[in-house]
Every structure is written in C-alpha cells, then in structure tokens.
Length: 263
Image (cartoon, rainbow, N blue to C red):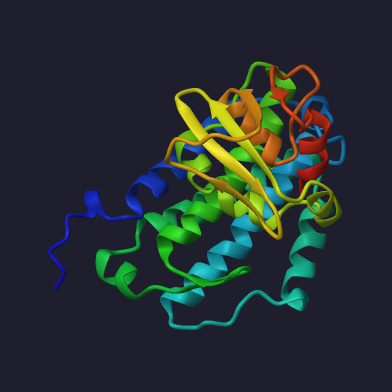
C-alpha cells in the first residue's frame, strides 16, 4: 500500500485550482437571469449560457472518460457518442444550460476528488489528446475552464482576469505550439521575442515550430510587454484592443494577434 501523503500528490494543486476556478465561475453566474445569460461574450460567437453549455457538456463527457480510465478502458471519445450530447445541451434554454452545467461540473469534480493515491498511480485517462495521467489531464481541464471562466466574467466585469494564472502559464508552451496560424508562423519564421510579464522574462521562438521558453532569463531582438493575464489571453486569442500590451523591435502587436487567432 502506498504511504504517500495525498496533500503532496502531483495532481493536488491542479485539482484544487480546478475546484477554485469552478467556485469562482459559480459566484459569477449564480442569480443571472435569462437576459444576462443571453449576453454575447468577448469573441461574439457564444453567449454566456452557450459557454456554460460548452463547459457542461465537456464535464459530462470528461466524467465518462475518467470513469473509463478508472475501469481500465482506454477507448477515447468517439464522435458518434459526442454529437448527441452536444445536441442535447444546445437544445436547452439558457437557464437550463446554467443549471445543467452546475450539475455536470459538480459530478466531474466529485469523481476527481474521490480518486485514491493507488488509483492515481496507474490511472490513464483516454482524453481527446490521447491517454494521460491525472496531473496532465487536470492541466487540460484547468486551462479550458479558466479561460472560458474569463470569457464569462469579463462580460460583467471588464477588469476580470484569468484565474489560476501561475498554473495556466505553466502550460503556455503547449498552447502556443499547438494552436497558432501556420501561415503567419511561416511569415514570422526565425523571430525571437522576449516576453516580459510581471516578474517573468520568457522567450517566444517562432521558426519551424512555435514555442515559449519559460523559467530562465532571455534576450531577443523584439520584446512584448504586458501583464501575465494579458499575455496569457494573447496566446489564447483573447487580447482586447484596450489591453496594455506593447511590442518593440521588428515584430508588431498585430503580428502576434494574427499568430494566435484563438480556438
């Protein structure tokens, strides 16, 4: 039997952060009426309720994937299983989308909180990006939840910031490397850009791939400066015109916004 202290489990800080992100979002959406829930979010593609529907359907799907992993079933999500779930959520009223999100989110978090140390040692969750351990899985879920949480919070408070920023930024290289515009990457190839935010100095490298190198001091011909919140949203395609982000050198702010169009 494992004698590891559950409070020191690698997954612990990620689970606590995901729980906190959920609580923060509940505080924002509790009590909203149909008109509030029908307001457009920053991207303009989804309303507040539709973002909750997206998070709720994801929580429902992910609960099943975690259960599969716990049972040793490594079948990944299949489109013929997913489409009926999405259709059902899309058919709900805004009030029901919020209520069902609350239910699905609580069920997902409850299942995650009940995973034992012994289960975690061997657990592989068959997620969309492939089988992964619990800590990696929680990183994916936290990034998704924190950014969509901002999408909603910003509607009612323009000063809102992305929650759990320290952990979300730890995964920023994966987001930058996977979710960028290939044509813009080719146009900007062989660029190195110093990324200055809060107490950090990282580096964005654009070449055959896109990477953000974190954790050490760097120099580069161009510099992008802003808060960790704003630069996180830049990489996630959520930078606003009014955000205080400055780019110097041969690269321009518009280049970076085009490189990271969002998803």
